Length: 497
Image (cartoon, rainbow, N blue to C red; front, side):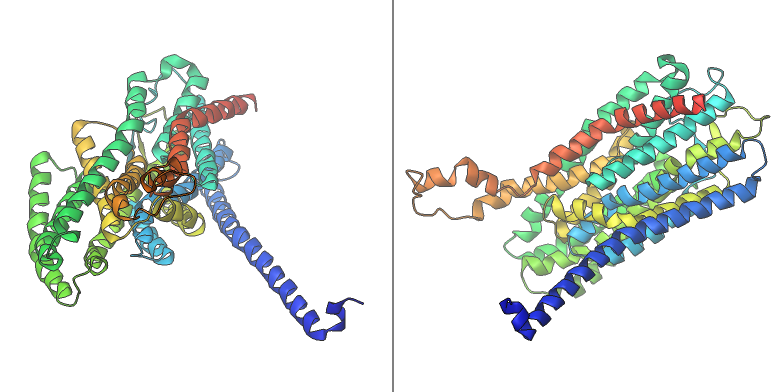
């Protein structure tokens, strides 16, 4: 008889360990099962509503039901992947918990989709194909169905791999592949595709450079100033006003463009007014907070908490207003052409129930599958705090404004992730020299300087995880070809059925 079997105390401890292991396994199983169950239930409700709305016996109703399911599936994946770019920095900066970030983002995304999502999706084909006489209505419906399913499937794969990708580029790739399968290369608008390819480079570099410049300014003028509190009292209200002005222009040009079409003069006036109002309002707020703070960087960082929360909320609102079309645009196109009397239009009216599918899908996808990508963007690329996360959020708004003004197509996903990398690379060049002191000579090196400058030690001083840089960049490059191939294969399969 073994020692454990002789001693009842040992048997009791062993039983407790087995019970703890069993509970851990059950908890992990439930943790993966519940999100999938919620997603399946949502898609089942969407399918039932579409079937009862259009009548299951009606001609073409099966296609609409499939389109509704695929649109809901796309919305779930947009919530799981794309929203992380807005909320990740705030979570990584320890300003918001994941639960709080999810609640704020879900409310703002749904509000943006329903309030400012618009009644019309302009050029549902995203300008990649030219709807018209080249393809029939049935072929166009199959194309849209293939595009949305291919895009959703690719985003699902990217989310599982922990790679934030552009949902807009995903649906563009799907439309491209379906268009080529439907009518060949002549249907594709290649100049537009060239602009989109250029944005793969423009978006992350612009976002990274602007975020790094903002952080360098904050470090020089506030965090490393001789008198930090006095510097913060002067500069933080101006930075808050800058953020208010940038986000006002951003919301006018992007978030509210379907509600209010503003000209350059109007945008300039409201942006200047927002700057002045925010500066005047934030001065007493900052002064009151500074009176309770010590002259330490960790305390001064908290001055950026509230502006950051407001900023990421506005980013989520604008994202919901813009990207809901990526989920329900193809569904709206299929619904609009379901009547044989209708042809293919460049502008498609979206029924309100379709907008609800998109808004709820994004919110549910964020709540169930979003935490994984939020952690990747906010915590695993580089270490963030309030000022760094503030720079990421403000960089996203400024980059989109500049690019939109210049007519350059950019991806908000690429900008936000590029900004996180930009902040991390700036830290490597400004913080590393003070992180380590030269140690006495190493047994494998002749001098301490040689040991300090060795490749191994340099790599240990990296503040950005390179593996995320290469994996995310690869996912961005692959997105359009992958979704195009998937959509083309699905289109051929639908034609054979």
